[in-house]
Length: 390
Ligand code: FAD
Image (cartoon, rainbow, N blue to C red; front, side):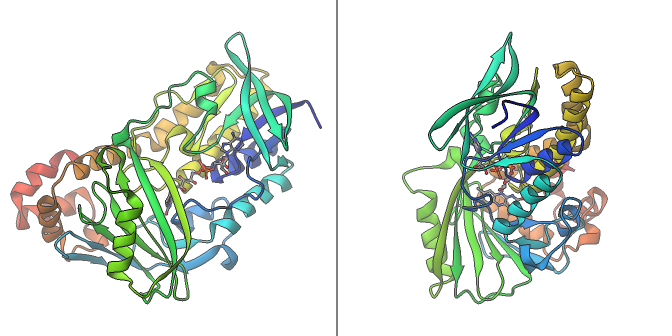
């Protein structure tokens, strides 16, 4: 067992595997994963844009469960907005993440990264306030691995950031508590996403139906932490499934939190970078984080290489990651956070009104100008309400 690497990456989700692969193109990398099987169990509804995902993995039918053409958004009163075409860069496939995540980790290994499963980070080696490696446990044995750079890609329950002195606490209003069944015996169009909004099914969140091929679907929902009450998310889901798919047979249950917060202010410190869910890099309006984790992982991997070459992993060098992340995705995240805050504070009546105004909208109208023109015609008062989002 080696005692030193250039870079240690904690967590082999999409963010960690892409970071490890990118760094391994020029450096010695160790990628550790606490689970014994990368990609399993899945904690995801698995929707992604194939065009964007292809940047990191050549498309393969093995990791694509279904191809999506459009979507339906159903308001609390049943008003349905239907898009027959997905907007550019919107999710258009449902993955088989068990295979997808594993393929990303295999690519990291092929690029030269050393991958260790059943290996849990238990702490960081700290010297004079700087991160100098990772304390680990593998099958009961404790040991330490020193490194110039550590990348924390340990997901929504990240501890690496906290160990490194960063404040990664999420407010209840900034986390969606999600629960999902993989349901068999579901008879739906296999090329449409469906989203249900409103307090009956998912207070301050939404319920989703994502086709998984054959007669199966990922059916789940997220409830904003601050709206949780005696009724648990699983109670909402059981009612939703019983209501919509009385014949459906749940064969798998997934539970997990999704950060729907503004971007963390600090994602680097001396010797340490956070990527993906660990850095709260999910899109707050929709809760998607696969692509942002991979994009962040690629930037962090490149910056780690530079730090190793310059033999300087101080914040001065690593902050290039934070700067590039903010200039590429920061504005989008902020815009989506505002939109999430707006939607989360709407009543069912407001959601119905928005649905009425947008009924019949098509992708080519979905620009600030197109939306403004539509609202001017259909509901000018709603335009006033929505103006700061456009
Ligand atoms: P993760 O995929 O969470 O990977 C983190 C890894 O770190 C895990 O493998 C974990 O085992 C490992 N780890 C944790 N701690 C340690 C440790 N101490 N030592 C070693 N390893 C450790 N996103 C989408 O884009 N589309 C969707 O449809 C979608 N649906 C979702 C539905 C649900 C119910 C949930 C919960 C999330 C959903 N997401 C979705 C979000 C998406 O799953 C995450 O944003 C994405 O997985 C983030 O990738 P990551 O690499 O940052 O973290």
